[in-house]
Image (cartoon, rainbow, N blue to C red):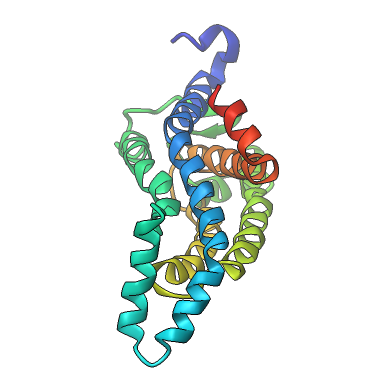
Length: 221
């Protein structure tokens, strides 16, 4: 393996991290589009408010009018979920590979087998055993998830509360906590993928929303 000289016994874990980075780079244009879409929906908020007042007695017509406005302005209300959906094949590939019996036996991250699970680590050495400590470090992703949740809630509060964007705004913040729960039940390699991807997402979105177009040019170039 190419990473063997650098990562030694953790070369497979390093390969999982590298795969995650490559996947995140591949979906980065969609992440930029999602940020632009969020900013556009905020910009269109006054016009949506006017439509809401105009069609306040006709919810179906209101939804059609709002979606028509987004189409006119070339804003997709679903852009925010596309990066996550396109990562699903990599997630499923890793899950299948590291859940296939003894096929990936012997590949570890420090003292924790990459094909093992948190419950097994706790059973073998307790939550503070060598393998358990690896998982405790991964569970620190809870801080990242909480950060994502607070940020998404603030953004959702600025987004027009009509149609699909409103529904997504209510659901997407909660999904960030799903990572914390998921890593307790999936193979360690998959948990490593999720933690790396989540950390990347937080840093990426923070940079894009803080610096705007300049950040987009820097990340794209």
